[in-house]
Every structure is written in C-alpha cells, then in structure tokens.
Length: 303
Length: 119
Image (cartoon, rainbow over all chains, first blue to last red; front, side):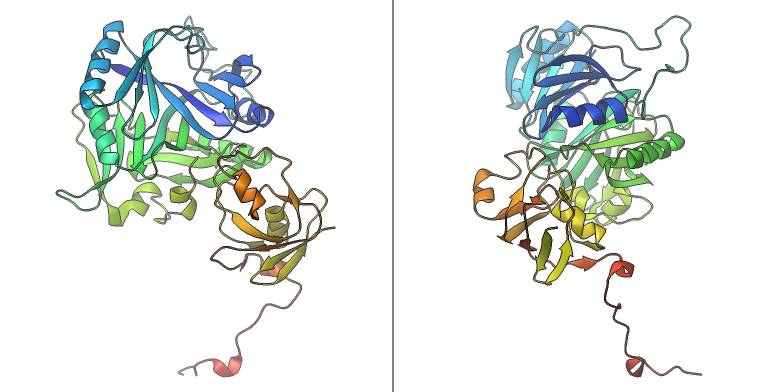
C-alpha cells in the first residue's frame, strides 16, 4: 500500500530536436511516443509506458508523477492532502497519455505532483523470461531508469511534513541550521528502499534543481562523463561523491538548461531507517564529499 | 569578425562567425560567473552596452523576458553578436582562466618586493 516509486518527470524544453539528441542519443532513452509539441521517453529497464515527458516551450518542471500500489490509495492520499490544506483535483484517464485516473496535488512548494495507479505497461527491453542482463541495442549512456528529483522550496520543513504525513515517505537525511530545533534547509525522502525518491532544498518555490537517472556503479558514471564530453553536454560537476545519500554523481545540463544527474550507489533504506542529520556548516561536505566546496551553480542554477 | 569588448575590464576578443559571446571569451581564456551555459538559468546575464545580438537557439521567455531584451539585458551563453558588441559584467570582473592565451606577458611579482629569505 502506498506510493511505490517516482513514475514520471514532465519537464519543459526550449527545443524538441535538441532534447531528442540529448535524451535519446546521449542518454539512450527510447522514444515511445511523440506529438508535435511533446516527446515521451522510457528507459530500458522500466516497464511502464514512459518516465520522461518533454514539452516544448520554456524550461523547468511541469509535474512529477508518483505511482501508487492500489486504487484505494488515491482516495486516502486525496483526503489526507486536503486535510493538510493542499489543493487537489481529480485527473481522468487520458489526461496524461497512457495514464489512468489519479489525483493531482499542488504541494506547499507550488510544485505539482500526480498520483496514479494505472499506466499502460509496455515491458522492459529485456523482457521477463530468461532475460539478458542488458539489451545490446543501447546507445549512449543507456540509462536503465529514472531515480529521483530534487526540487526547491521556500520552506523545506513543511514539504517534508507533507510527504511524511500525507504520502508516508520516510526521511533518510536532513540538513538543519543547528542540531536540536534548527530550521530544516534540506530533506531527502524515500518511499522505496533507495536513499531518496524526492528531495527538497531551500530555494524559490516551484523550481527544479534536477532529476536523476540511476546507473549501476562508479565505472558507469565515468563512462557517462566521457560520453558527455563527446556530445558536448554542459557538465555542472563530477564525477564525484555525495556525502548525503553516499551516492556517486555527475550533474549536467540538458540543452535547455534543466539539470540532470547520473547517480549510482547509495545505501538501502527501510521504514525504520534512522534519519541522518547534517549541520549547515557541513553542507558542502554533504553535497560534494570530496571537494567539500559548493560550487556557485549548485545553489543558483534552477529551472 | 565581430569584436566583443568587456567592461569594466576593457578586454576585447574576436568572435568567430556564429560564435556566441561566452564561447568567444572562453576560447580566449577568459571567464566569469556562469550557470548552465544552455540558456536555462540566467546566471550569465550581462548588460549589452552597444551593438546587437541574435539568439539562434530558442531562449525561454521566463529566463530572458521581452522587456529585458528591449532594455539591454543579454544572455551571454546564447547571444551571438551581429557585429561589434560591448558588454558590461554585473557586479564582477572578468577572470583570466588561461594566462597562456594572453597576448601580453602575465604580470610577475616585483623581485624587490619579496621578503628576504632567512638562511
């Protein structure tokens, strides 16, 4: 019962053809559907219809879709969201291509999250009977799946409380101004067994910091970096290591300036995971463990 | 070839045909505070003091508004000079990132100003 994963990221891009080269050729996602102004992509190890939707016009995040396990979860989460004071509305089958009925929620941070239980299933590229470990037709990085998104909020503490109280997410890590009663500057939360399925840091409401793809290991991260050089992808930072989540990373930008990440590693979480706390004076080490310096872009570049 | 002049440092570099302002400065070994370098964040905005620029790549209206364009704001990572341009950095100075590319010798410290070595 409950939210089972980040299902889709719907973002805006300024140029569909440039986006096609980036998400299709460099990252190696498969184009599953296209409209004149929208591209729908799926990664090879995902089985649902799509996980990334790119809409022409502007930059930034349109919405995040989280898949729930059962139909009745939608009613429960809708009631809880309303009790929390969030604006909700019902969405109908077909509002999103291939996606069934659901609940649309405006978060306290003005971001839009959609909960849904039904989506057209197309299967992974390797299938479920005697599968190979990877499909041999992959191009570019060949990302297997999306992993998480980091968004900015004027009050990360309230958004954390929303995801905990309404959607039953757990906190894996938190950055606070001081121990014992300090303000929350950032929060990393999970509904799966990964370190994070959503994260928030302090910043303007409604903005996207990045969305991330999972890669198997550090060697894959390095290989992704090499491909970014070959394809002239604008790299923010990396390869390097996070303190928070313990993951390995490269941050980079799509051709419209939306930040993406390739992320590997990290620990396993469970509902009883003891939340980790970082104090603000150690934030730079938490974000970039090796350099222990926040580059200016980390906090200033948002779409 | 268009000349890109940067104020307040009064450094001038040549831009190739179709080359953007930031790219021309990078190629000459200079840099300043930038963000995504893909037109999405607005961190590299500068003032366009004189000259005209084109934006061959689409720039989001939320990043560079029509009013900003009309009043001389230039998104330097995406702006391509139409001819000679003069830009002014906002609250910062141009940094020399690759001194080897500078035509003038890199200033060396005056030996007479060095503290005496203790033997």
